[in-house]
Length: 425
Ligand SMILES: Nc1nc2c(ncn2[C@@H]2O[C@H](COP(=O)(O)OP(=O)(O)OP(=O)(O)O)[C@@H](O)[C@H]2O)c(=O)[nH]1
Ligand SMILES: [Mg+2]
Image (tube, rainbow, N blue to C red; front, side, top):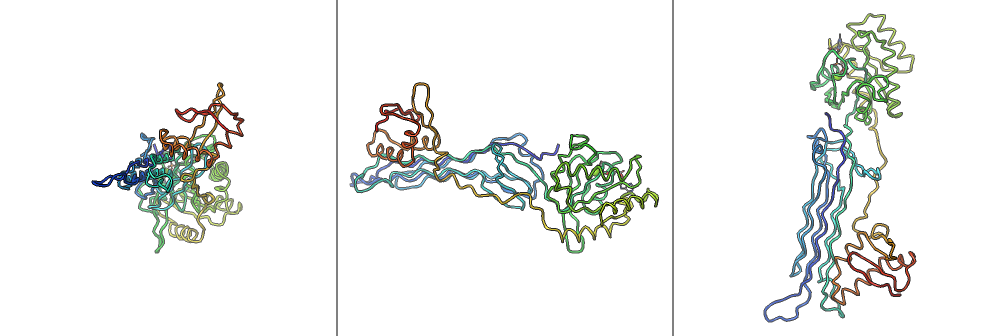
């Protein structure tokens, strides 16, 4: 089985909590606050590697969690940052948010890296909260939780040229004579069951050809191997359409050619419009009449580049390879997606995802979400300074306004985590 898609869960590390501490030293009493900041949580990072070829690594492991940041320490020492979790994937991997379907990354080059889930920032230690009035802050901020995401991961191989054609047409044979690749070749349909890449070296130019399993009529409805593998040639600049002109299996080469083109359009209209070089293969086993008939018909359909070859007997290969090389260097790369927008949400508290207000059947206004979690962990409820900081956070974050909007009345109960208090105007 060729692993070309997977669904996984990733979570970046939480920021470490800030520290509450006061400077102590021999002969020094009542030293100032010296609690350091918590360390940042580790990021979840994806790195493309040309040494990997499948998503096999996700076959049994579906959960990936980066390390949390450490707690801040006394003497203004920062907590250690959590280590990033680095996940290697093949070049050509596309990462999407599984829930929204939003594209997060498209890794097209070796060693390309992308941070998919950002680690939470560490909480500030109490050293930051001293001021003229509040000389001994007994609170520090909690760390911000790391981002978590469900990801849909897909592999679309990066090849310049895609070989398409009916099963048994000779695609793998052609790959084996144009490149150093050694695909399996046999006289029965569906010999190729997973994509194979080969590198063509022609003059000083090199490019990658992908051989995929044969396609048959109604592949879009799942016939044969289906057309799932077509995704691997979606990015190719050029298609090389291989047809068996000898009609050995009793099929009609023109019908084969037309039905493959129909399947390409069914899969993706763009793929139907992709430039095509048509290869009439197995000319050694075909009559001149059969060959002429095919070439005439294909040219009549508007295809200019038609090559008569025998992959097995290595006839006509040079002209074909030169043409493919020329087209590959001329054609622009295929752009699959629009540019990915940056999403910088995690370090900022934005209103929508910082809290949520729900009113339960006892008319308790419950506040949940990241804001609530962080603020609750940051507050020392036995410390008056910390409490007033908490109250100001409620106003600044817009919680009070949101409660009013939700219809809160004087004396109603508000709940955040384990804390319940009465709402006072
Ligand atoms: N006579 C002749 N036979 C050929 C030629 N090219 C390939 N063949 C034979 O055709 C059969 C199928 O070749 P493959 O290269 O496996 O065909 P394929 O298109 O990759 O087939 P699938 O992987 O099953 O889709 C093999 O027996 C090859 O030896 C040719 O130019 N002439
Ligand atoms: Mg094959």
